[in-house]
Image (cartoon, rainbow, N blue to C red; front, side, top):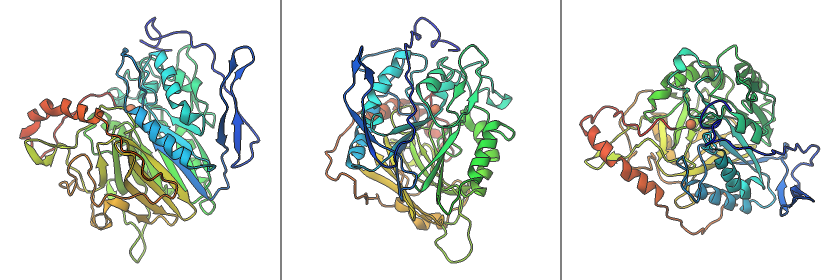
Length: 475
Ligand SMILES: [Fe+2]
């Protein structure tokens, strides 16, 4: 480890053994049963999973960022009670799948252990009911990595890459997970190199790419070369959809000022690759909200491709950092100015919400669908469908408003309250969706909203401008 508290007597303890096994030669789409343990120490119960099937005509995944873990005790760091609900609803969905393979995609800010080793153990115990059944894919976030002496820290990033990793410098992340590929960056200390930084795989009809926003992604870097080569190599006749995922967002309408220089670099260097290679969907975390954008290129909404005539497909961006951590930007109107949200919703933001939850991705050869499920009721509250042609059927966002949209920030339209949609709430159309699940009402969100009331009063004067309210840098 590289810094406190991870390498101090408070945060560190002997991690013992981490057993890491790669299973090869599995048959495709077959259920395998397994146990872990030994004769001398005992065996686990029997678990099972359905192996990946690259040739399947259907791809299913559950995707989110910034989940964290819940602890039944107070400890040095805030923990994330809401993560219990996220796991509960996803487990419901996985059990409803039967023998269809699926996987999890947790795109950074994973356990929020931040140097306190036992929180990683708590996290793995919490995800075990899910992670023992489906593959658990990750990419790196600031809370797995950032420390004062991290090796890649350009001038523009000094306010961005700070101490968020609690001194872990990617060590637990690199050793506890084993993702595809061989990406590796030295830590510049005795600590092991950081792995699992960028990789890709295809599952059925979708090619998934994972990137690191915490290490060098600029042209000339090995990561940039990987992304470019990888995106250019996908046979879109065989695999019609490409999904790119990273932690810190290229687009957000939250007032996440700290990351503005990094967003500029992402837009300047990575967005052209995404557009040129017809990436279908780009998922980000870090901002602890769900926010779906129109198909974007340089802040401008592109055509949905539903009209006659030539058009160019742009990637749809969605921020999905709403799985558990609760320090979030407030978009709700203030009590004394109910018609003015703290952060106005520009037209490119098709739907944004303050509810916790996760997303489900279901893709066939013809269509990729992303649904946002709210933890408060386990139901679908937003959905976007993208055809193999690149045409975007815009679900609950309201197709008409996208046709008219431009790159300017406008006043909020229909974006009131925590559920900032521009159209009707979408109902689920998935055959495997479990109807009639009992409604769970959670108090955590209400508690955090109350915490902001005193702060928002100060901002009441600036009605027409963006109000620089930020609860914390701890995204
Ligand atoms: Fe983050």
